Image (cartoon, rainbow, N blue to C red):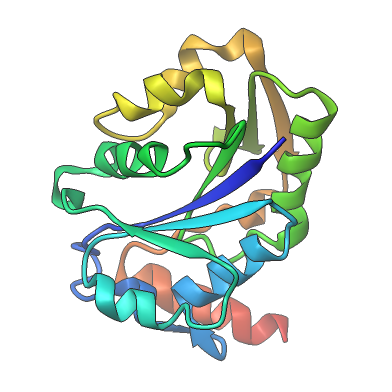
Length: 195
């Protein structure tokens, strides 16, 4: 049973004003940090969906055990990245979708989704940080057609299939995504203080 991990990394970083995934997070670019964390979780396959400045973002992944695919329609929104990913998951029974800009989700966190799906290999495994449902989420192949039809994020799929979803509680402090310069400054300061 082949289970993939997908890192969605195609967005244009409009609120940051520059390619946020290349910004240093600790000793490495943000994208490399995230993909390395996912790579440590034990999935059978790791796919990174690139888009904006894809040559530069691909370069920072050198040496990591992942493959990449370019979403040419990234400017139309996250739905196009789901479509691009699903099109590249031919033989996967399930796939976890993670965001490239969540630097504090750990390899062991990602592994919890994989283990939960392997224990009950159907449906969806979702994450809740306190009262907030947010990525990563893992979907059985049965949901791939719905994911490929999305315009934006996967919230509508989660809502439609709440009865088929295993929800994992994650620590609230893991829910950090980096969209603005202020987000980046806060995350960098936190990373420095955690050392």
